[in-house]
Amino acid sequence: MRPIEGILDNNTKKKFFQRLKKNGGEFSFRKILGKGKNVYEANITLFNAFKKSNIDKNGKFGFQRYFAAHTIMMSFEGVPAIYFNSIFGNSNDNSKYIISGNKRDLNRYRWNSLKLENHLKDKKSKQNKYYVNMINLLKIRNKQKAFHPNARRITLDFGSRVFAFKRISLDRKQTITCITNMTSNVQLLNVNSKAMGGKNLLNEKIVDINKKLQLQPFQTVWISN
Image (cartoon, rainbow, N blue to C red; front, side):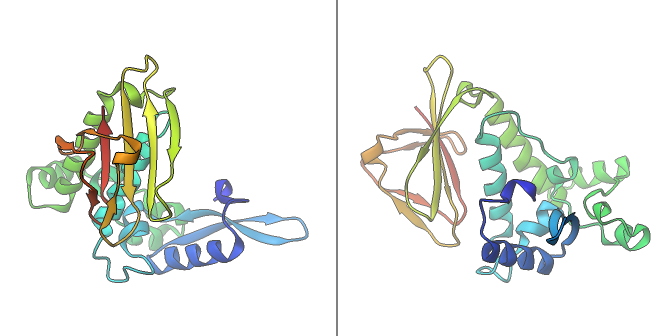
């Protein structure tokens, strides 16, 4: 949690930690001389962390939130780091935590390889669903020059409900506009003013700048010129 210090105010952090706790999270702390202690680490899988929100208390859009977070991470500069268990949408390993008492064990489930392989062969399994979507994202990302670790990023402003930026390849031949709906509601965007026509790499559909772009809850588009 060190990176959020100085960015999120105390009230926002309090609500954030309360939500993670409700979603099954535990916390590790660090002592601060003369100031008590601060949350140092949230011990929780990403599946649990994104499962429910204060607005979506029943977890209707948990799957969509999960992949919205990963598409944003994959489109940033640098090389994305992904937990092995996150590829399969693993939930908290509460059994191991109860036995060991080590909070980090919540996010360190150890697979039996045969068991995992059987899950992946079952197209109706949760593991197959998450694996197929996650690997597809990585395959698309790896083919794009604009997602080079050192490619330039430019922030775009569509208001507080949408997170958007552009990535520009080192040779300036490719631009990818990354837009994510950060809400549980459909959002309509006017892309004509920013001339963001092109192909959405995530579904191969053409984005027409003469029409408003409709984003479903937590949907992401990667629009390539």
